[in-house]
Image (cartoon, rainbow, N blue to C red; front, top):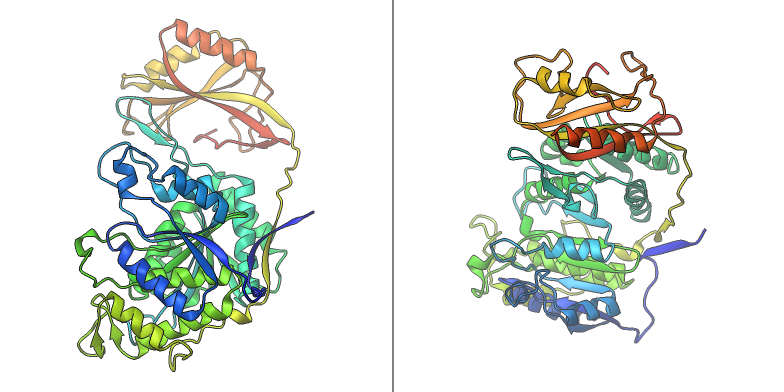
Length: 504
C-alpha cells in the first residue's frame, strides 16, 4: 500500500531550493502582523517566494459568498501552501465561513495546535503546560447540514466517518512518534452518542494498539475539558472531533496565557494552511499595536512542514528570547514584569535582532531534531453485509396526546410493517409514555417488521423490503400525515446500525 507523505520533518531543502507560498494579508490587524511576520522570515533566511492572494471581507462585499477570489483559488491550487492572516466575515446572512470552505474544499483534515506556557513572562497558573491538540477538521456538526423541519424544530446532522476517524487518529499517533511525545488522549462523548462518538472511540482503540510505545487513554469530553482547564500539565497530545477540538483548543490557548500567542496548522494530503488562531480585531486595526506572535508561530509551523526546520527553530528561539527580554506588545505587557512596551513593527525588529540566540529559561525549540515523517495509509473499505430492518418516519403533528397519533399509526394496515414506538425529542412517548414529558410538533415513529421481537434485552429484527417502506409512506400520505423525513434502519453484518429507543 502506498503511503501519502504529509509532513517532512527530517528533510531539509537543498541550497537554492525555494517554495512558493500563497500569502493572505487578511483584514483588520492582518496586514500589520503579516508584514511583521514576513520581515522576520526574510531576515531568518526562509527559502520562500510569496504570491499575495485576495481573500476576506472585500471579496465577500464584492459579491463572492465564499470570500475567496478565483485568482486566489488558482494560486492556492498551484502553490499548495497557504500562510493566512485573520479575516473578517461581514455581518449578515449568506456569507459562508472562509475557514470552513478552505478546510473542506482542500481536504485539510488535521488541525494541529501546539500550546505552550511562557511562564513567567506571560501569566498563567500552569507553568508546565505543553500540550498539542489535534482536531478533526472536516466532519462532525461542522458539515453544516441543517434543516428546519417543523415550526418548532430545527436539526443539524452530525456526520462521523470511519475514514475521517482513521486519518485523524493515526495522524495524532504519527505526530506523537515524530515529535517524541509520550501520550495521546482521545476525548469523546460516546456514553451518549454511542454510534457517532462510539465510532471515533472504537477507531482510536484499534489504532492505539499499533503504537504500544505511546501511552493512550480516553476521556469523556466534559470531564476531559474540565481537567484540561484545571490540570493541563497532565496532557501531552489530545485528539478529538471537530466541535470538541474547536472548543478545547481555545480553552488551552487561553489558560496558557493568551489566545493571541497561538498558531495552528491545517494539514491535508496535498495542501496545508498555517495561521494565527485569533480574529482580525478590527477595533485595533491600523493602530500598529497588535501582537504578531500568533502568526509568527503559524509561520514556524509552516517552515517545519516545508522541511526548513533550522530556520523555524531560529525564529521560534528568537521569539522566545524577545519575550524573555521583556519586550512586549500591549496585550501581554505587565508593569511589574515587562521591560519595554513596543508596537507591532518594533516587536518584529526585536525578534530579528535576536536571531541566532536561544532562550535562557523557556524551552529551546528543536524542530530540526524531528524524528521523521508523518505518513497516513490510504483508506481501505471493508465489505459488510447491509440489511434493511425498518424505518424511522418523522412526522410534523400539532397534537399533544401521543396516544392519539400512536393509535392512529398502529391501526394503519401497512404491508408487513408495524409501529414499534414513538419518541419526541428522543424520549419515548408511545406506548406507555409519561404525561409529564414535554412534547413538540416533531414525532419520530419507528416501524419494524411484523415478526420482529424487540421487547427484550436482545431485540431481534427481521429483514424488510424497501417496497414495504414505500407502501407505508404512501399510506401515511393518503391519511394526511405530514412526513418530513425518513431514516432507514440497517444492520451491518448483523450488528444494529441505529440507536434503540427506551424500552426497545
